[in-house]
Length: 176
Figure 1: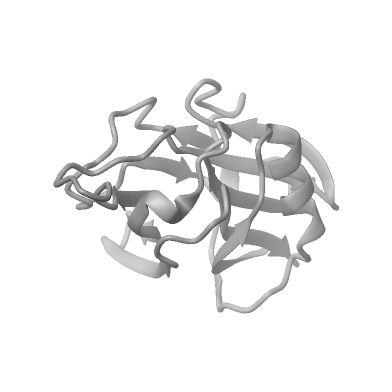
Figure 2: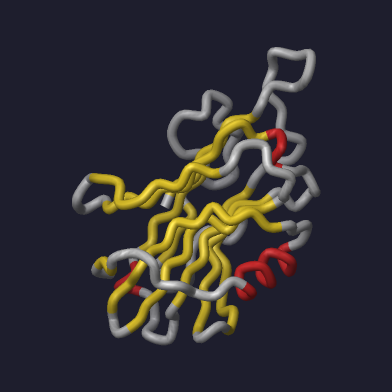
């Protein structure tokens, strides 16, 4: 799963701006109970199933490619882990109104192609986006690309927002 964004130019300036650095998060759940989070400063789940690969990176000003990414090895997740929520947030209170374009995409590296892409709303007044929801039911994993804006200024706010949205199965299942 990769995310990328491009900052909008400041009024009266040719230079892009983003007041705070955006960060991406993978939130792991067991039947609605939070288990763990993977992000730049906690870059891997203990079993290696999910890794945040890019670490803290400078913003991709050009808006090409992914600014931050995760590798999710779903088959390695413990059997009790049934949901992974991917999100991006700016905890310093900066809103996405300074973001001109953003995307979330899921790539199957074994097949070498994109399974899903969600283009996020430009210049929204929220501080976080729930980007994708991956759920396991009956042994099959299903991914739903969302791009759902939420208001979050702390990691607790982000957890509450992720937990408040129901885990819907809207996409075709894919193997872990």
